Amino acid sequence: LTVVNSLCGSLTNVLLDIFPRGHVTLFSLDVEGSEPSVLKHLDFEKVYVEIMKIENRNNFCKESHCKSRDEFRKIMDKAGYKIFVVVVTKSDLYT
Image 1 (cartoon, rainbow, N blue to C red):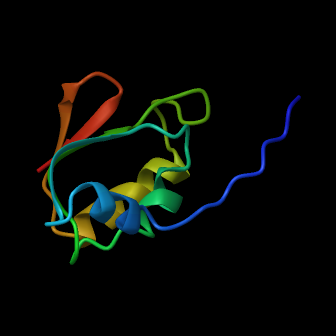
Image 2: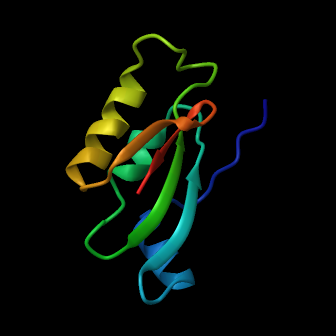
């Protein structure tokens, strides 16, 4: 097991560095169950994502009830996104 220390920060700042106008056409998020942690720190007022794909099933989050999936779906709903669950295998698609 190798431990790597790294700096962490808001995804908002990273995206604004890459997309200064705050407009992202397509964003795919796959962080093995940590999706809510990432999305909680994304300022949807500053960054607009047209299409977001979020993995909803992995080794930690199976087809049945999954706390991580429930949490990120609430975050995306609160941000005003519409969900499409059967378009991409093992992922939710949002517009």
